[in-house]
Length: 332
Image 1 (tube, rainbow, N blue to C red):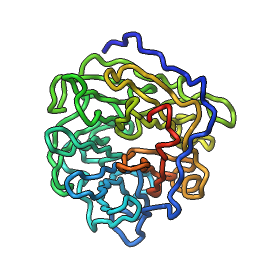
Image 2 (image 1 turned 180 degrees about the vertical axis):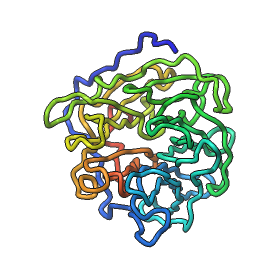
Image 3 (image 1 turned 90 degrees about the vertical axis):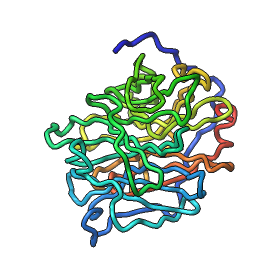
């Protein structure tokens, strides 16, 4: 893997207002069910997409009944408005789906690809893997109930992976985290299976905003939601962590964003200098892992808003609104 020179981001010199995600008033959206065999302890880190075929919002969320979050399954929830959700009784993607998923499936991200399939990029753990030896598996579905295994994005440790929802030029582009930075790779193979080439660092962790309380730069960053196409570039939300260990009481997961060039996504046009979501509500600061807002999904509603979905304290599913007018001059 090579690391060619990357395009340096443009820092906004006209940045004058704070951009913030407005939390849904009825958060959290989905909570653990103490009577469930599979979502008793935590439901969090969800992928969401608005289905072009029926107009429904469809959510795949991570769920577990273990306090250590091992052996996660993936549940399904449906919504007409993106705010009120109906949960399917059983998991739709279960650990043990194949030999690569024996210890669980985690943190799904969803895109609708040009071949008509919905592709799900999720962290998978095999039976023989070490606790941190996680690869990103790719599944595909047409109805969100039946799934096919596609393969691995890379046959190595990786996290936080998704492709752009359409080819750019004649290539598919893939965003992922090879610790501690965000990388981008491309492939002329539009099956999305493998052959990802020209891997390079896209955004370094130190280029993201510092912790507003102590000015410390992020320890690591990762792509949050699949990119959203806007008139002025690809909007990408970014998860940041200021500490490595989940057991560090000062660790905080928050959310920022960057904008990539429409025609050359290896070019970073803008990195926002502040977080747009910081743990503050009780369902974000108290739970299985305190002080976490971790996003895997953002959906353009087709109107004036973008809905953002995230896990709160690694325990519940929450959401909020990013108004497009707040991004005027940056994306619109």
